[in-house]
Amino acid sequence: MVLRIVGAGPSSEYLSIKAINAIGSADKVYIDTYTSIAPGVDEELVARLNPRAEVVRATRVHLEDNAHMIIEEARNRNIVILVPGDPLTATTHIAILVEARRRGIEAELVPGLSGLQAVIDATGLQFYRFGKPVTLVYPEPGLRPYSTVETIHENMRRNLHTLVLLDLRLDQGKAMTIPEAVKLLLDLEAELARKGEAEPLIRDALIVAVARAALPGQKCVAGAPGRVAAEQYPPPPHSLVVTAPRLHPVEEEALQVLCGMGGAEA
Image (cartoon, rainbow, N blue to C red; front, side):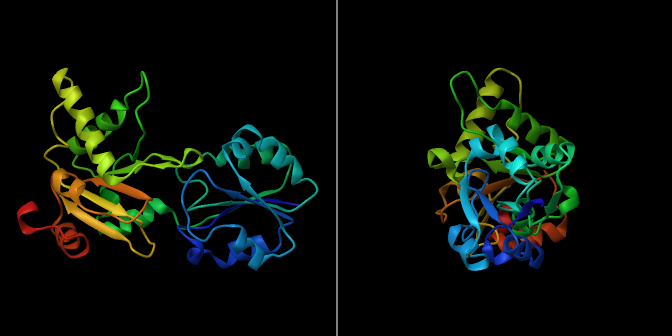
């Protein structure tokens, strides 16, 4: 018996042969419904690939608070945790893999195409010029995500791009949009500037917005923050890239062709 943590990619269209085989041999499939959005990764998909498998729509409670129960099931049954994107990219599924191995339970990882890589690919920006990625979360009472702005500024000082992942709270029916994210970043930066703790770097930066990377209806827009925020976008998932102050000529051309960047904004 084995526990397999399977990456589904950005949608069911990106399932690998190994992922399909893992689902087909499972006794029970937990579909991760909280870490990201992956169209077509659902009960219908599992039913087509393995009609005999039991299916559970797994929430944060299943995969964090009760992960030990899923792990123990794998002593006697073949269990799959089906995860949007890649299971170990910007998620906490490594904890499940490690704990299963510690308990002496066979556990395997089936990688999938990462949504993060899909966003970078959509922009045409050079992968090795990205610094530390960040997640922009919704503010809460007593919590303003200033660290996100600080990391972006640090990357910009090093002439590196920043991939900004936007908050997904699918259990609450919330997914941060590009216009919301741009406004929040500018508000946070302005607050830090008023305190004398930051320069207005993002305000003057070239930003690239990507909606539904690698999915039908994908849209990429590059420009000043105001232009990016004013565009109309298809539904989430959405992401942003705050670019380095200086672009390589190949990157400039890619943004012009792929994301509609105007010559005046290069």
